[in-house]
Length: 210
Image (cartoon, rainbow, N blue to C red; front, side, top):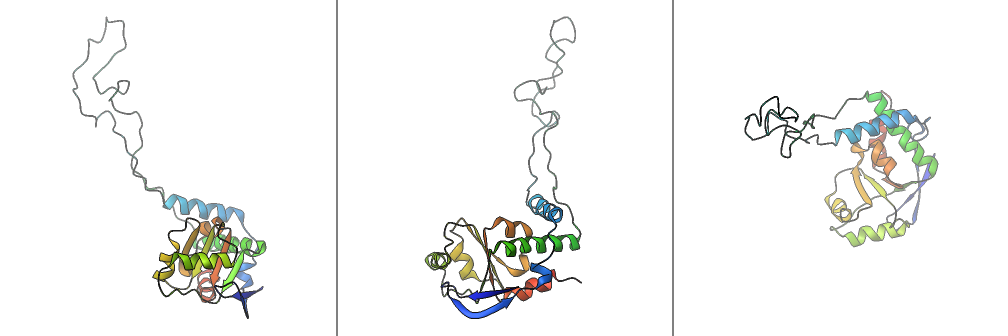
């Protein structure tokens, strides 16, 4: 598959980029995508929710009334979960939600996501992405050139570029990542995928079969 290469003004440069069929034209595997997205979201969870159980609540352990003869239920102390301020029954505890996946499966998931974007025609190749200074106005101008100001976009650049990152961070629908961090969730979450030509080699090295 070959795609025209554009500059940030939205004009064709006259050059074309050849997309590797082993990455952008595979047989998509929806279950691999599901597992990879599930892992991405799970690994992002803090897992710090915590409530106090009966033994952790501050309060007297004095028995409120005698065991029998009151006509009421048995109550051991004010820390009883049935009382306001008492401990919580089976409350959340800090835990690690992350889990591991096979590398081959993760590669397949990312290839599947890129294939879907290619099939939809939502991949645009850029010759470069450089700003002399952090300017949100310039990043907006780039988006207008591709009629994408109201769309959720993902921009993949070859290396970390502070000016590009800072120019896009105030725009809620714009996300910028470096090629080595490309992942299934963010590719699928974006309506349009912009890839700087220099990123293609990195993507190919990461996702090519061993």
